[in-house]
Amino acid sequence: MKVEIDKFGKSHWGLLLYIETRCVDYKGKLDFSQMRINGERHPGLDVNRIRGKFPSHLKGGEKLENHDDWDCAEDLEASVLVKIDGTGVNPIMKMTALGWETVGRLRAFKAEGGQCADFVFKR
Image (spheres, rainbow, N blue to C red):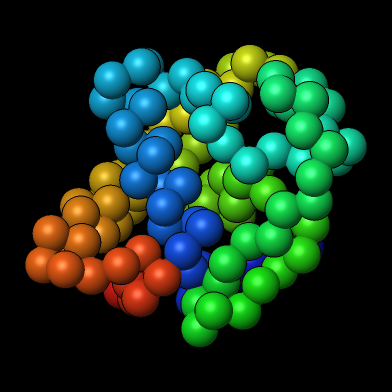
């Protein structure tokens, strides 16, 4: 299930911050051992061979069951915040102009004491 940007909460915004760090420091290469990956749904990305079903935390504290960080990454791409390049098992993340702008606002929000769960996207 795809999640629209107005429903993004802790999981999506936290992942956007992680992707930004990986773009700046690691040329967009993700470390899947630091991500919530459902190995049954995304076996090529499951370096830890975790078989859990992870929920994503959406706006307002709602949980979306069986929706892991890779699902969130695809939602971020659908919302034009990131672009996923590379291959299926070796993806390379790229921030879009909207992604850089949004992550800048998100970092400022957090610097002022805000939490990812409470961040509100504005165009």
